[in-house]
Image (tube, rainbow, N blue to C red; front, side, top):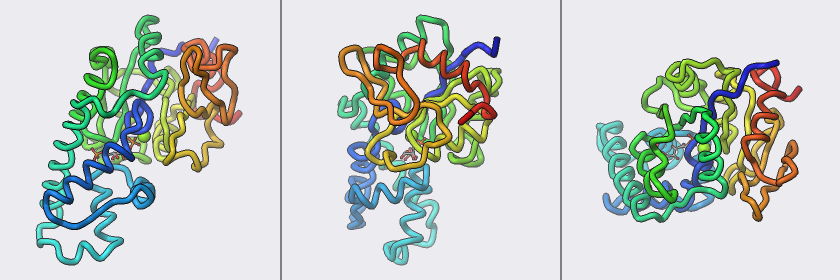
Length: 264
Ligand code: XBP
Ligand code: MG
């Protein structure tokens, strides 16, 4: 028998909730407006900028690519940090207002895992306070206490697609890659998990990640799904009930416990 499934590790943005288009993007735009910058990130431009993970890094990329950066003050990184602090405050207000719900099936699956004693962790690029507020306000109860470990992008030298944040989660859990299964929504997230040697992966697509290459992942679905509102599998197969549950995750994990098992 292979290793037991001991922990589920979740990405946050795009996976637990559809935070990008009507969440982070709006918060960036509002911060730009507050500072009178006259910058506007359209849905399409934001989709391009998402190739860079991390909000501060995303602003830096924008400034490198577009002429807006030329007129900025000398202390570029201090300016970006202040801009990002504003953006985070605005994003937190959005979360507290309940404007960003969890994706379908997320709270159900977390509850199932918790009830079965499977440990829960988060590997994200965003800030820990964003995660705490999302978990507090997006579900029907504060889900934060179900998560044993939250590892965030600014805690590690390199953000996704580097494996650092997944390595940190494994160290904090005290588990091996083969004990875990990851749920992600993006190619950068998949690369990070694979880089840390975690092989069992589920991808829940969203509008920004639907066109990405997930050929190395055993199960790709449009959402986790709920009883009566099934998910759609774009790669791999769902169980008879048509949604992602712990029985399905245990099967996937047994079939591909480590990175070596991927695509086999
Ligand atoms: C998510 C991100 C984040 C958010 C913004 O990537 O790249 O940067 O867009 O968050 P992933 P911050 O889902 O792969 O972790 O502005 O707080 O960085
Ligand atoms: Mg994501």
